[in-house]
Structure formats: structure tokens, C-alpha cells
Length: 216
Image 1 (cartoon, one colour):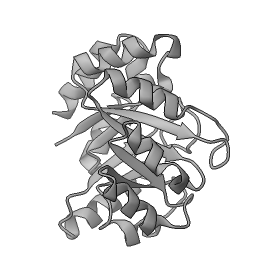
Image 2 (cartoon, one colour):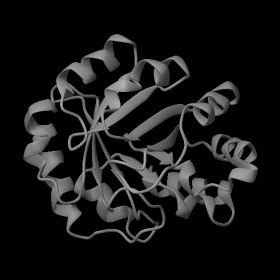
Image 3 (cartoon, one colour):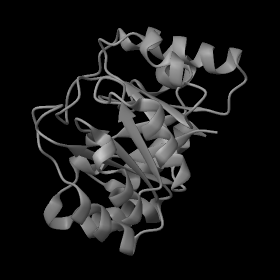
């Protein structure tokens, strides 16, 4: 099964509540929340108050992507405020097994992310400890970037590892995904599709429905 995960990084924050309602009304099951700290990545995005506010009004699965150095510092608070799943970067955490275990023990889904330049082998030791592997298809830190085509081989490699080990692990991609490159990513094995600009620019409901149609 494939899952659409609109990223609010591309939303209009003046209209955030209304736009999240449109995403939910159109049938998207997930909402992607990028937490950036200005250290692991150059940008600063948003954090606990935004998650808490959206959680109060939405039943969507809150997919929190931690682009943060030492993400273990924030796990308990994020889950308390409504995170359903937390993905940490292999490049940003020195205590990955312990952090994943904490996420799971607090009742949330676990994820491990790798940047475009990071080999799949870096995530391999944790693949049996997570519910999802996230392959970044742009360099993290900014929305609206173009998809890095070389990442398609990495997606295929992760899918092969998941299937070979008969794991119940989702494969998420994030960055530069549009309707024009969606199919090749699905064929490569991705089944959680994060996309921001392609959803929030223009008719949000129509965009969500078109993605869901092509992903079914």
C-alpha cells in the first residue's frame, strides 16, 4: 500500500490550519512535519508549538522528520505533543539504537533517514529496528529543490534489503517529488511519498486527489 505524506514546509503559514483541513478532506493519510534546528541543516523551520496546534485539530498521522542535531533531546516532548512517528537522521545522532528504542517505548513509530550522499550501508545496522527508512532525494534543509536523480538507485537498494529480509518496513522518500517523477519512485520501491510544493501550490484538494489516484 502506498501513502501520501504532504509536507507542511511548503504550506502558507497564514493559512496553515485551513490548508491542513483541505489535505485531510482530500484523503491524504499522513502529514509530514520537518523540524530543522539551524545546526544539522542551515535552516530553522518550526517545532513543538506547530505540532501541538495541528495535532489538536487533525487526525492525520503526524510524521515528524527530525533534521536536528542530537534528536534524542526532544523525543519525549514531541511524542507528548502528538507525534505518531519520529524519523531521525543517521548522520545526526550518536546513540541511534537507544533513541529508536525510546521512540518505540513511548508508543510512536520509528524511522531512520539518510542524506543523498550517505550510503545505504549506514542505515543497514538499524533496518530491523525501525518502521520506516527515509531516503532523502534532495539535500535536507530547504523546500522546493529539484529531485536528485541518482537517488533512485538508493531507493532500489533499500527496497531490495527490506524485501530480502522480509521486513514490515515502509520506504519513504522526501524531496523534489512531483507528478512527473512519481511513477519511477513507486516502481523503484518507495511507498511513503513526501511532497510539499506539488501539493500546496495551487488547488490543494485537487493536487492531493491526483497524487492518490496515481498511487492507487
